[in-house]
Image (cartoon, rainbow, N blue to C red):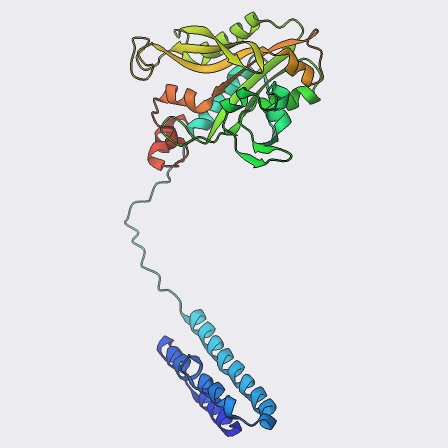
Length: 341
């Protein structure tokens, strides 16, 4: 068998490989499943035990040589193949550079941020993976309170409870915990709720919430701040109304409606024939929330508000399907190229 091993090595050394066809022929002849090396290993079973050590070593050495020669030839062929460059037609027109566009969510977020910056609101940020205390407990959601069912939550772990934040109100809590009074800031960010995705709902969306805490802050301050914001964003002709509502972290609470931008208040399917559409929730910060953050509600009062950026964008740009914001369809995004700057 030693002689056979030497003979096959000599054949492999003399085998000329010049192209892919001869490389494949080499593979089939020597190292493929039905090649000579596998045939030798099959015959190795018949070798007497006292010869197996020497013959086995020679056989393994042959296998390594055959495979190494194949790999070396393969690499050489790949390096030697150079693509033929197509001739350049210098008479063709230049391909214009296409400008990208801002995402409508970013456009609206920056508009809202600029409006509130003009009246002294800073910008605060916080983690998207949040603990139960900052997302629920400190905001006056006691354990097992039915108000928690208002928001279907993605839990990361149960004990201790970690979750994807359901609102940016958690940033308000973190800001009040670490900041001296007064506090005046907005909190833009992405939030998550366990909802079925449709034209009107999504499992992730964007919010901007705001808070102002100081001595002597009243509901009148809340109304004037939001009046200013709406007039700046939607125009001076827009009509506004407040409706009583309920949120665990504000008392009293109110929702704000504006004139439907589609029908101008005449009534349509978007506003359900009422002429009004709701754009945000608001209210005076609950005394328990102020106390939970280490401040005295007898000394400090304040208001808070929150809105969905997608909702505002849908109203301003007449977008009828929430899914368009996350599908990255360039046909949709190109419509906002003129708003890039």
